[in-house]
Amino acid sequence: MNRQVDVLIIGAGAAGMMCAIEAGKRGRSVLIIDHADAPGEKIRISGGGRCNFTNLNAGPQNFISNNPHFCISALRRYNQRDFIGLVDRHGIAWHEKTLGQLFCDGSSKQIIQMLVTEMNKARVELRLHTAVTSIERSGDGFIVDLAGERVQCVSLVVACGGKSIPKMGATGFGYDIARQFGLLVTETRPALVPLTFDEHTLAPLKSLSGVSVDAVVGHGRTKFAEAMLFTHRGLSGPSILQISSYWREGDTISVAMLPGTKVFDALRAARARNGRQALQTALGELLPKRLAQLIAENSKVDTHLADLSDKQLLAVEKAVNDWQVKPAGSEGYRTAEVTLGGVSTDGLDQKTMEAKSEKGLYFIGEVVDVTGWLGGYNFQWAWSSGWVAGQVA
Image 1 (tube, one colour):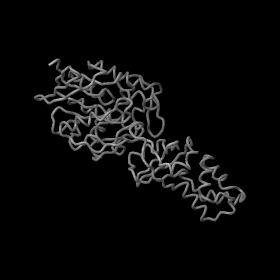
Image 2: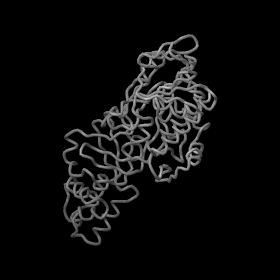
Image 3: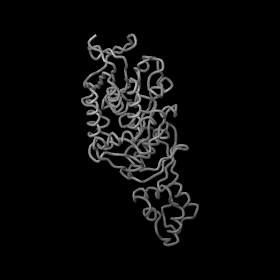
Image 4: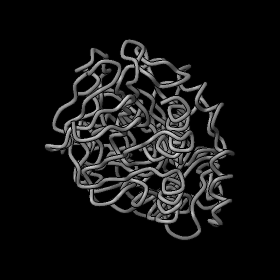
């Protein structure tokens, strides 16, 4: 045996580093490893380089899981105010953008440096460019082969994320570890991801690439009111990324492009004021001109308002505020911000993140079947789940 440690953490991302800090504070000898060149790579690229590190509104209602109650314990024991306190103690300036989303005023690298500083204070050893080649149970602990070096640990924490953004080295390795030890893994799929259209649906919309509107996008009873962006492949923007976590192939989504506006009433008023005005001109006062033009053309009644009946104006309103469209797919893990699904919560203790059937084995962060909304929620899950595991690992 090359060496022994109390805790070995696989993955130096948000959850892994938080767990390492807390375990180290308890006097545990901690080794945290990652195959990447630097720790916290997802932190670095998040929020346009400013890291949307949590959300003021974070709570169980903002997470998707086969067991929606699983996340409650961790989120209560280490919440957004706790993490904000850590950020403040390190003198990192931040601001609220919209909908409770908190960003660094400066660089996301400040959050990474904060975590590295805390790990150093807790005497955590960080090792990069390190791959795991095998894991086996050994008595009350585990033996992990790190490309030739065998490390024995009492607690093994899996914090290596999901499949999203494979260009950063993301894989399903954490799910493989879970299966090796008999834990179930729920279906995984890309989440918080742009949606794409088939060629037939896309063809008439290509001229809209780059056009953005504030929309309400819905799937069943779930709705999100945020910006929506037309792209050369389909739809993106916060509202689409949000609904992508609920959408499934074959499903239709609904889009209101002027939520809160009674389009029918507005067009009737415009008709009364100036019946010679063209429909697309009237719509162009409410919507981006390219979008207004396309809706008017598709309505097959792009003529003077005076020539349009109330029934035809109602059809235009439906096209604007009840657009029913069926995406063909998504852009996949390549651009997905997170992975939906993962290690089943049925096999984990919600208070500790320890596997119920394997003493000393923990799963935290994105690898677990707990997925947050867009807006800092997934980072809060990383901080919370990492913190609770760090209290016992």
